[in-house]
Length: 77
Image (tube, rainbow, N blue to C red; front, side, top):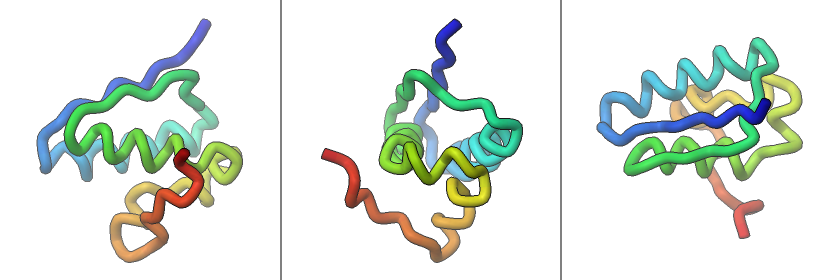
């Protein structure tokens, strides 16, 4: 069954989403579909831009990137 991550907008929810996404990746839950609006779209784009790196949870730390890590979207086309 396909898995979708639906991420809502709201500035303060962005940090909450980052923590939840990190927990999901640590448990090896991967999305087949990402949908987001406002800050949720930013978080979705971050995750979508790192499909290979996110195979290892430590490489897909949304919260780590937000606190000074790599937030570039170089692989998004």
